[in-house]
Image (tube, rainbow, N blue to C red; front, side):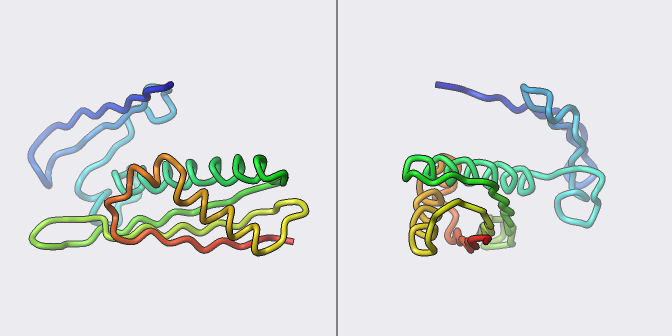
Length: 145
């Protein structure tokens, strides 16, 4: 199958330190991250939770489209947002919730089948499986006309 790599170079101590994150494909190349991009409102870089959110939204969208194909329905478009919540718990940080919101245009599908396929994609996508330790993963799926 496949194996993908991400790399980080971190320089400095804790709050003052800065990291540079890259992906093997080069899609991310030396993207900045640090305390301020993770815990404050600094939008000049990324953070691990944002990357998890993007990966989960991407994986779920593909899984849903493939599930529709397998069931005989053609997806015209799928738009997904994943919100990853980081909280302080037991003296450390923890991801306690991921909320997926998806809207899709799928030809010829009814609401019940749409919801069934969406829930199946949520449970079955590899990133959902990898994140199974997160206590709450929700999905709000909306079928567009």
